[in-house]
Length: 336
Ligand code: NAD
Image (cartoon, rainbow, N blue to C red; front, side, top):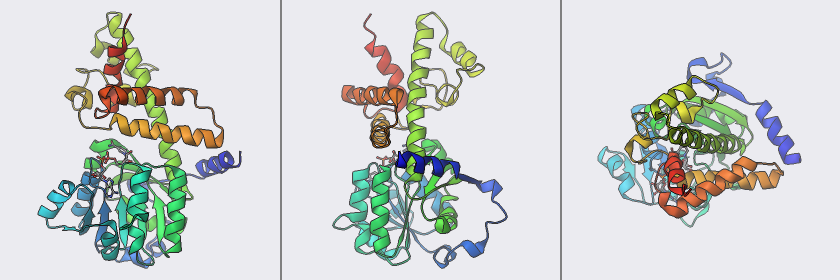
Protein backbone atom coordinates (compact mmCIF):
# COMPACT_ATOMS: atom_id res chain seq x y z
CA UNK A 1 0.00 0.00 0.00
CA UNK A 2 2.75 2.42 1.00
CA UNK A 3 4.63 1.63 -2.19
CA UNK A 4 1.59 2.20 -4.37
CA UNK A 5 0.94 5.53 -2.62
CA UNK A 6 4.53 6.55 -3.22
CA UNK A 7 4.16 5.60 -6.89
CA UNK A 8 0.94 7.56 -7.23
CA UNK A 9 2.59 10.58 -5.65
CA UNK A 10 5.47 10.32 -8.09
CA UNK A 11 3.18 10.11 -11.10
CA UNK A 12 1.05 13.06 -10.00
CA UNK A 13 4.24 15.06 -9.50
CA UNK A 14 5.45 14.20 -12.99
CA UNK A 15 6.84 17.13 -14.95
CA UNK A 16 7.36 17.19 -18.66
CA UNK A 17 9.97 19.20 -20.49
CA UNK A 18 10.28 18.74 -24.19
CA UNK A 19 13.35 20.01 -26.04
CA UNK A 20 11.17 22.59 -27.76
CA UNK A 21 9.34 23.81 -24.62
CA UNK A 22 11.99 24.19 -21.97
CA UNK A 23 10.60 26.41 -19.18
CA UNK A 24 12.19 29.80 -18.55
CA UNK A 25 13.11 28.52 -15.08
CA UNK A 26 15.54 26.09 -16.75
CA UNK A 27 18.60 28.17 -16.00
CA UNK A 28 22.22 27.35 -16.48
CA UNK A 29 22.73 28.21 -12.84
CA UNK A 30 21.02 24.94 -12.04
CA UNK A 31 23.58 22.99 -14.02
CA UNK A 32 26.39 21.79 -11.81
CA UNK A 33 30.06 22.33 -12.60
CA UNK A 34 30.43 18.75 -13.90
CA UNK A 35 28.03 19.28 -16.79
CA UNK A 36 29.27 22.85 -17.37
CA UNK A 37 32.45 21.11 -18.45
CA UNK A 38 30.38 20.65 -21.61
CA UNK A 39 32.15 18.64 -24.30
CA UNK A 40 34.39 16.59 -22.03
CA UNK A 41 34.32 12.84 -22.85
CA UNK A 42 31.18 10.89 -22.06
CA UNK A 43 31.39 7.20 -21.18
CA UNK A 44 29.02 4.85 -23.00
CA UNK A 45 28.58 1.21 -21.98
CA UNK A 46 26.39 -1.16 -24.04
CA UNK A 47 26.49 -0.48 -27.81
CA UNK A 48 23.69 -2.76 -28.97
CA UNK A 49 20.56 -2.03 -31.03
CA UNK A 50 19.77 1.04 -28.93
CA UNK A 51 23.15 2.06 -27.50
CA UNK A 52 24.78 2.22 -30.94
CA UNK A 53 22.54 4.95 -32.42
CA UNK A 54 22.29 6.76 -29.07
CA UNK A 55 26.08 6.99 -28.80
CA UNK A 56 26.26 8.18 -32.41
CA UNK A 57 23.90 11.04 -31.57
CA UNK A 58 26.19 12.10 -28.73
CA UNK A 59 29.06 12.07 -31.25
CA UNK A 60 26.99 14.24 -33.64
CA UNK A 61 26.61 16.75 -30.81
CA UNK A 62 30.39 16.88 -30.45
CA UNK A 63 30.92 14.70 -27.38
CA UNK A 64 34.05 12.54 -27.47
CA UNK A 65 33.21 9.04 -26.23
CA UNK A 66 34.85 6.45 -24.01
CA UNK A 67 33.32 3.17 -25.12
CA UNK A 68 32.93 -0.31 -23.61
CA UNK A 69 30.86 -3.37 -24.55
CA UNK A 70 31.42 -7.02 -23.54
CA UNK A 71 31.02 -7.89 -27.20
CA UNK A 72 34.11 -6.30 -28.81
CA UNK A 73 32.59 -6.20 -32.31
CA UNK A 74 30.00 -3.73 -31.01
CA UNK A 75 32.82 -1.21 -30.41
CA UNK A 76 34.51 -1.56 -33.76
CA UNK A 77 32.76 1.15 -35.73
CA UNK A 78 33.31 3.61 -32.86
CA UNK A 79 36.99 2.74 -32.78
CA UNK A 80 37.14 3.25 -36.57
CA UNK A 81 35.50 6.66 -36.05
CA UNK A 82 38.30 7.63 -33.65
CA UNK A 83 36.50 7.14 -30.33
CA UNK A 84 38.38 5.60 -27.41
CA UNK A 85 37.54 1.97 -26.65
CA UNK A 86 38.56 0.62 -23.22
CA UNK A 87 38.51 -2.85 -21.72
CA UNK A 88 36.16 -2.58 -18.74
CA UNK A 89 33.44 -0.41 -17.18
CA UNK A 90 36.00 0.52 -14.48
CA UNK A 91 38.26 1.97 -17.19
CA UNK A 92 35.33 4.00 -18.53
CA UNK A 93 34.79 5.41 -15.03
CA UNK A 94 38.46 6.30 -14.74
CA UNK A 95 38.33 8.39 -17.93
CA UNK A 96 34.85 9.93 -17.88
CA UNK A 97 32.81 11.62 -15.18
CA UNK A 98 29.52 11.27 -17.06
CA UNK A 99 28.56 7.73 -18.09
CA UNK A 100 25.52 6.30 -19.83
CA UNK A 101 24.74 2.58 -19.60
CA UNK A 102 22.36 0.86 -22.07
CA UNK A 103 22.26 -2.83 -21.14
CA UNK A 104 19.73 -5.63 -21.61
CA UNK A 105 18.80 -6.72 -18.08
CA UNK A 106 19.16 -6.05 -14.34
CA UNK A 107 21.90 -8.69 -14.12
CA UNK A 108 23.95 -6.96 -16.83
CA UNK A 109 23.53 -3.59 -15.11
CA UNK A 110 24.64 -5.02 -11.75
CA UNK A 111 27.69 -6.54 -13.46
CA UNK A 112 28.59 -3.26 -15.19
CA UNK A 113 28.27 -1.23 -11.97
CA UNK A 114 29.22 -3.59 -9.15
CA UNK A 115 31.15 -6.39 -10.91
CA UNK A 116 34.85 -7.14 -10.41
CA UNK A 117 35.76 -4.54 -13.07
CA UNK A 118 32.63 -2.48 -12.65
CA UNK A 119 32.14 1.28 -12.74
CA UNK A 120 32.16 1.49 -8.94
CA UNK A 121 35.74 0.23 -8.80
CA UNK A 122 37.07 3.49 -10.26
CA UNK A 123 34.21 5.98 -10.22
CA UNK A 124 35.24 9.55 -9.44
CA UNK A 125 33.47 11.63 -6.80
CA UNK A 126 30.79 13.84 -8.34
CA UNK A 127 30.40 11.65 -11.44
CA UNK A 128 26.96 11.42 -13.03
CA UNK A 129 25.92 7.85 -13.92
CA UNK A 130 22.78 7.52 -16.05
CA UNK A 131 21.31 4.06 -16.62
CA UNK A 132 19.00 3.96 -19.65
CA UNK A 133 18.50 0.17 -19.56
CA UNK A 134 15.03 -1.11 -18.67
CA UNK A 135 15.59 -2.92 -15.37
CA UNK A 136 13.87 -3.67 -12.07
CA UNK A 137 13.17 -0.39 -10.20
CA UNK A 138 14.37 -2.10 -7.00
CA UNK A 139 17.76 -2.74 -8.67
CA UNK A 140 17.97 0.92 -9.75
CA UNK A 141 17.42 1.95 -6.12
CA UNK A 142 20.12 -0.45 -4.90
CA UNK A 143 22.58 0.80 -7.52
CA UNK A 144 21.80 4.39 -6.55
CA UNK A 145 22.68 3.61 -2.92
CA UNK A 146 25.99 2.02 -3.93
CA UNK A 147 26.84 4.92 -6.21
CA UNK A 148 25.95 7.46 -3.54
CA UNK A 149 28.35 5.74 -1.11
CA UNK A 150 31.12 6.54 -3.61
CA UNK A 151 30.13 10.22 -3.68
CA UNK A 152 28.66 10.03 -7.18
CA UNK A 153 25.12 10.43 -8.56
CA UNK A 154 22.92 7.76 -10.17
CA UNK A 155 19.80 8.36 -12.25
CA UNK A 156 17.56 5.85 -13.99
CA UNK A 157 16.51 7.07 -17.44
CA UNK A 158 14.90 4.26 -19.45
CA UNK A 159 13.62 5.10 -22.90
CA UNK A 160 10.63 4.55 -25.10
CA UNK A 161 10.67 4.91 -28.87
CA UNK A 162 12.63 1.97 -30.24
CA UNK A 163 15.53 1.77 -32.66
CA UNK A 164 14.01 4.25 -35.16
CA UNK A 165 13.62 6.93 -32.51
CA UNK A 166 17.11 6.15 -31.19
CA UNK A 167 18.49 6.80 -34.69
CA UNK A 168 16.58 10.02 -35.24
CA UNK A 169 17.28 11.31 -31.73
CA UNK A 170 13.60 11.28 -30.82
CA UNK A 171 13.55 8.98 -27.82
CA UNK A 172 11.48 9.74 -24.73
CA UNK A 173 13.52 9.50 -21.52
CA UNK A 174 11.75 8.84 -18.21
CA UNK A 175 14.11 10.08 -15.54
CA UNK A 176 14.27 9.19 -11.85
CA UNK A 177 16.79 10.64 -9.42
CA UNK A 178 17.75 13.69 -7.43
CA UNK A 179 15.88 16.63 -8.94
CA UNK A 180 18.84 19.01 -8.63
CA UNK A 181 20.79 16.79 -11.04
CA UNK A 182 18.05 16.64 -13.66
CA UNK A 183 19.36 19.58 -15.69
CA UNK A 184 22.82 17.98 -15.89
CA UNK A 185 21.29 14.72 -17.12
CA UNK A 186 19.10 16.60 -19.56
CA UNK A 187 22.12 18.15 -21.27
CA UNK A 188 23.14 14.68 -22.49
CA UNK A 189 19.73 13.05 -22.82
CA UNK A 190 18.49 15.97 -24.93
CA UNK A 191 21.07 14.99 -27.59
CA UNK A 192 19.41 11.59 -27.93
CA UNK A 193 15.74 12.31 -27.27
CA UNK A 194 13.07 14.89 -28.00
CA UNK A 195 11.28 14.36 -24.68
CA UNK A 196 13.03 14.21 -21.33
CA UNK A 197 10.54 13.74 -18.49
CA UNK A 198 11.38 14.06 -14.81
CA UNK A 199 9.36 11.41 -12.95
CA UNK A 200 10.57 11.69 -9.31
CA UNK A 201 12.96 9.79 -7.06
CA UNK A 202 15.29 7.03 -8.34
CA UNK A 203 13.27 4.10 -9.72
CA UNK A 204 10.29 6.15 -10.91
CA UNK A 205 11.68 6.33 -14.45
CA UNK A 206 11.68 2.51 -14.50
CA UNK A 207 8.18 2.46 -13.02
CA UNK A 208 6.86 4.64 -15.87
CA UNK A 209 8.68 2.56 -18.47
CA UNK A 210 7.38 -0.76 -17.13
CA UNK A 211 3.78 0.52 -17.15
CA UNK A 212 4.17 1.77 -20.73
CA UNK A 213 5.59 -1.52 -21.98
CA UNK A 214 2.95 -3.60 -20.25
CA UNK A 215 0.30 -1.55 -22.04
CA UNK A 216 2.23 -1.82 -25.32
CA UNK A 217 2.37 -5.63 -25.05
CA UNK A 218 -1.34 -5.85 -24.33
CA UNK A 219 -2.22 -3.52 -27.22
CA UNK A 220 0.09 -5.40 -29.61
CA UNK A 221 -1.51 -8.74 -28.75
CA UNK A 222 -4.97 -7.17 -29.09
CA UNK A 223 -4.08 -5.70 -32.49
CA UNK A 224 -2.69 -9.04 -33.68
CA UNK A 225 -5.83 -10.88 -32.55
CA UNK A 226 -8.19 -8.35 -34.15
CA UNK A 227 -6.26 -8.29 -37.43
CA UNK A 228 -6.12 -12.09 -37.57
CA UNK A 229 -9.84 -12.42 -36.85
CA UNK A 230 -10.68 -9.84 -39.54
CA UNK A 231 -8.50 -11.64 -42.09
CA UNK A 232 -10.21 -14.95 -41.24
CA UNK A 233 -13.55 -13.20 -41.77
CA UNK A 234 -12.44 -12.28 -45.28
CA UNK A 235 -11.31 -8.68 -44.83
CA UNK A 236 -8.35 -7.27 -46.69
CA UNK A 237 -5.68 -6.57 -44.00
CA UNK A 238 -4.82 -3.10 -45.36
CA UNK A 239 -8.49 -2.11 -45.43
CA UNK A 240 -9.05 -3.46 -41.92
CA UNK A 241 -6.02 -1.55 -40.61
CA UNK A 242 -7.32 1.62 -42.30
CA UNK A 243 -10.73 1.19 -40.64
CA UNK A 244 -9.22 0.46 -37.20
CA UNK A 245 -7.00 3.52 -37.55
CA UNK A 246 -10.00 5.78 -38.16
CA UNK A 247 -12.01 4.11 -35.39
CA UNK A 248 -11.88 3.64 -31.62
CA UNK A 249 -9.64 0.54 -31.86
CA UNK A 250 -6.74 2.67 -33.14
CA UNK A 251 -3.49 2.45 -31.16
CA UNK A 252 0.28 2.70 -31.80
CA UNK A 253 0.42 -1.01 -32.58
CA UNK A 254 -2.24 -0.63 -35.28
CA UNK A 255 -1.27 2.71 -36.88
CA UNK A 256 2.52 2.95 -36.46
CA UNK A 257 3.83 -0.59 -35.99
CA UNK A 258 1.20 -2.85 -37.54
CA UNK A 259 2.11 -6.54 -36.95
CA UNK A 260 0.64 -7.88 -40.20
CA UNK A 261 3.11 -8.29 -43.10
CA UNK A 262 2.19 -6.16 -46.09
CA UNK A 263 0.13 -3.57 -44.20
CA UNK A 264 2.95 -1.06 -43.61
CA UNK A 265 6.43 -0.41 -44.96
CA UNK A 266 9.48 0.21 -42.78
CA UNK A 267 8.32 -1.82 -39.77
CA UNK A 268 9.61 -5.23 -38.61
CA UNK A 269 6.51 -7.04 -39.94
CA UNK A 270 7.61 -5.91 -43.41
CA UNK A 271 11.01 -7.52 -42.88
CA UNK A 272 10.29 -10.98 -41.47
CA UNK A 273 10.15 -9.40 -37.98
CA UNK A 274 13.89 -8.62 -38.01
CA UNK A 275 15.28 -5.71 -35.94
CA UNK A 276 13.06 -3.61 -33.68
CA UNK A 277 12.26 -4.64 -30.11
CA UNK A 278 12.96 -8.31 -29.44
CA UNK A 279 10.32 -10.65 -28.00
CA UNK A 280 12.86 -11.61 -25.31
CA UNK A 281 13.17 -8.01 -24.16
CA UNK A 282 9.38 -7.67 -24.08
CA UNK A 283 9.11 -10.88 -22.03
CA UNK A 284 11.73 -9.43 -19.68
CA UNK A 285 9.82 -6.15 -19.26
CA UNK A 286 6.57 -8.03 -18.60
CA UNK A 287 8.43 -10.06 -15.96
CA UNK A 288 9.43 -6.76 -14.33
CA UNK A 289 5.78 -5.65 -14.44
CA UNK A 290 4.79 -8.98 -12.87
CA UNK A 291 7.31 -8.57 -10.03
CA UNK A 292 6.24 -4.96 -9.45
CA UNK A 293 2.57 -5.96 -9.43
CA UNK A 294 3.30 -8.63 -6.81
CA UNK A 295 5.25 -6.25 -4.59
CA UNK A 296 2.57 -3.52 -4.83
CA UNK A 297 -0.39 -5.98 -4.71
CA UNK A 298 -1.70 -4.53 -8.00
CA UNK A 299 -3.99 -6.65 -10.20
CA UNK A 300 -2.56 -6.97 -13.73
CA UNK A 301 -4.73 -9.66 -15.25
CA UNK A 302 -4.00 -8.82 -18.88
CA UNK A 303 -0.38 -7.95 -18.10
CA UNK A 304 0.14 -11.43 -16.62
CA UNK A 305 -1.50 -13.03 -19.63
CA UNK A 306 0.73 -11.00 -21.95
CA UNK A 307 3.78 -12.16 -19.95
CA UNK A 308 2.82 -15.81 -20.47
CA UNK A 309 2.22 -15.25 -24.20
CA UNK A 310 5.63 -13.64 -24.73
CA UNK A 311 7.38 -16.31 -22.63
CA UNK A 312 5.72 -18.99 -24.71
CA UNK A 313 6.69 -17.20 -27.93
CA UNK A 314 10.33 -17.14 -26.85
CA UNK A 315 10.23 -20.83 -25.96
CA UNK A 316 8.80 -21.61 -29.38
CA UNK A 317 11.58 -20.00 -31.40
CA UNK A 318 10.54 -16.34 -31.56
CA UNK A 319 13.09 -15.00 -29.10
CA UNK A 320 15.11 -13.21 -31.77
CA UNK A 321 12.10 -11.81 -33.61
CA UNK A 322 10.51 -8.43 -33.05
CA UNK A 323 7.68 -8.47 -30.48
CA UNK A 324 5.10 -7.77 -33.23
CA UNK A 325 5.74 -11.36 -34.40
CA UNK A 326 2.99 -12.25 -31.90
CA UNK A 327 0.74 -12.05 -35.01
CA UNK A 328 2.67 -14.88 -36.67
CA UNK A 329 2.76 -16.80 -33.38
CA UNK A 330 -1.05 -16.61 -33.09
CA UNK A 331 -1.50 -17.82 -36.64
CA UNK A 332 0.75 -20.80 -35.97
CA UNK A 333 -1.21 -21.56 -32.81
CA UNK A 334 -4.43 -21.87 -34.80
CA UNK A 335 -5.42 -25.49 -34.64
CA UNK A 336 -9.16 -25.47 -35.18
P1 NAD B 1 20.98 -5.24 -27.14
O1 NAD B 1 21.00 -6.62 -26.61
O2 NAD B 1 20.85 -5.01 -28.61
O3 NAD B 1 22.29 -4.44 -26.67
C1 NAD B 1 22.85 -4.54 -25.39
C2 NAD B 1 24.35 -4.41 -25.48
O4 NAD B 1 24.87 -4.48 -24.14
C3 NAD B 1 25.01 -5.54 -26.27
O5 NAD B 1 25.90 -4.99 -27.23
C4 NAD B 1 25.76 -6.36 -25.21
O6 NAD B 1 26.95 -6.95 -25.70
C5 NAD B 1 26.05 -5.29 -24.16
N1 NAD B 1 26.27 -5.81 -22.81
C6 NAD B 1 25.58 -6.76 -22.14
N2 NAD B 1 26.08 -6.90 -20.90
C7 NAD B 1 27.09 -6.02 -20.79
C8 NAD B 1 27.98 -5.68 -19.72
N3 NAD B 1 27.92 -6.29 -18.52
N4 NAD B 1 28.90 -4.72 -19.94
C9 NAD B 1 28.98 -4.11 -21.15
N5 NAD B 1 28.17 -4.38 -22.19
C10 NAD B 1 27.22 -5.33 -21.99
O7 NAD B 1 19.78 -4.50 -26.35
P2 NAD B 1 19.02 -3.17 -26.81
O8 NAD B 1 17.92 -3.51 -27.75
O9 NAD B 1 20.03 -2.14 -27.17
O10 NAD B 1 18.30 -2.78 -25.42
C11 NAD B 1 19.02 -2.21 -24.34
C12 NAD B 1 18.01 -1.81 -23.27
O11 NAD B 1 17.08 -0.87 -23.82
C13 NAD B 1 17.18 -3.00 -22.75
O12 NAD B 1 17.03 -2.89 -21.36
C14 NAD B 1 15.85 -2.84 -23.48
O13 NAD B 1 14.77 -3.39 -22.73
C15 NAD B 1 15.75 -1.33 -23.62
N6 NAD B 1 14.96 -0.87 -24.76
C16 NAD B 1 15.11 -1.44 -25.99
C17 NAD B 1 14.33 -0.97 -27.05
C18 NAD B 1 14.45 -1.57 -28.44
O14 NAD B 1 13.63 -1.26 -29.29
N7 NAD B 1 15.46 -2.40 -28.71
C19 NAD B 1 13.42 0.08 -26.86
C20 NAD B 1 13.33 0.65 -25.60
C21 NAD B 1 14.10 0.17 -24.55
